[in-house]
Image 1 (tube, rainbow, N blue to C red):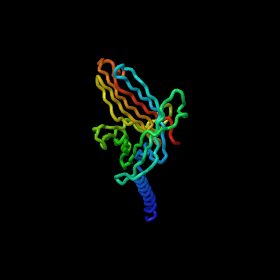
Image 2 (cartoon, rainbow, N blue to C red):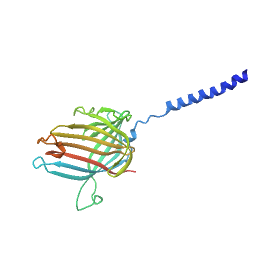
Image 3 (cartoon, helix red, strand yellow):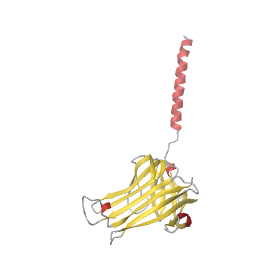
Image 4 (cartoon, one colour):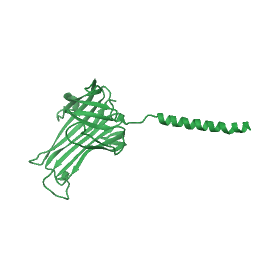
Length: 240
């Protein structure tokens, strides 16, 4: 009798030990917050090409400005909140048709700061703080990107996450897109988005603000622009 009881108890004991082990492994597995979409390492740098198209409000004709921007994290420091922030130095090269970009020296443009928090990333641009990302990364998650400034509430959302995508003819296996703002009327069209690639950071930025007082309901504002601009910043290289 004892032999037969032991015969059945041993498999049950191993079964419960296995289940207990699986539960333990599951509970201790770290959650992927998605913070590698905004890596913060000293000397991490990204170079972008920028095209800025501005429409003359008198002639309605577009004029395009081209240049390159390099952003590099140069320093970590303790901020006023007694937490760590990062100094982001930004350099610029203006397009010159008589030279290649390699022949043009970088000029310091400005200095921004980045502050990571447990559930968000804050970036201060021209002394204005924006909440760029929130964690964990979840599709359709929403937040007020202007919660740290006085510009007014603006709802950011993750339009998609973890998508493979070509940006500026460069393949990225994991990209997310933040829709920062979109507005359309008969006389205005505004759109603001940013894209981030895993282990690289910001790889694309677009700001569109167009206006037309000549109302043609069947024609979108983009096809009858009288005023405004389109700004596009695309990655071309980064520290590997």
